[in-house]
Structure formats: structure tokens, C-alpha cells
Length: 70
Image (cartoon, rainbow, N blue to C red):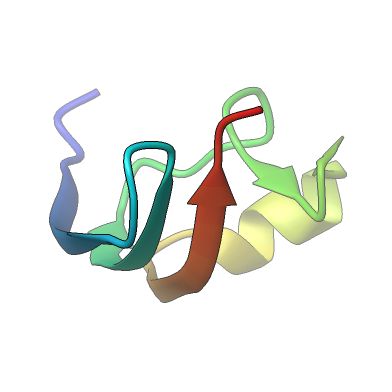
């Protein structure tokens, strides 16, 4: 209790047509309150050992892609 998580993010989208767009997104932060019950690594709940390593971890996520609605 008392630990903070800080998240900063930005994203842009560019329409190519009515149903298709390009996107770029960035998210970064510091996870001081990381723990095994709330942390996922590669889509799976982490182990207690991994959770300990994630305490006070900083992270950066970047996504670039194309989205199309069928």
C-alpha cells in the first residue's frame, strides 16, 4: 500500500479510408506497485520470482500497425 504506478502514453491515427487507418502508440511508465496478482508477462500470469524482479520496474511499449474493419 502506498506504492504508485506512473503511466504516460500517446497515440496517433491516420485515416486511409472509411474503414482503414494507420496507428502508432507509445506507452511508458514505472510500476512500483507491481505484484504477481496484477502482472502478466507474454500473456501469462507471472511467477512469484518474476514478480519480485518486476518491483520498481520501468517499461516502454510501442505499437505501429494498420487496422481494417470488415
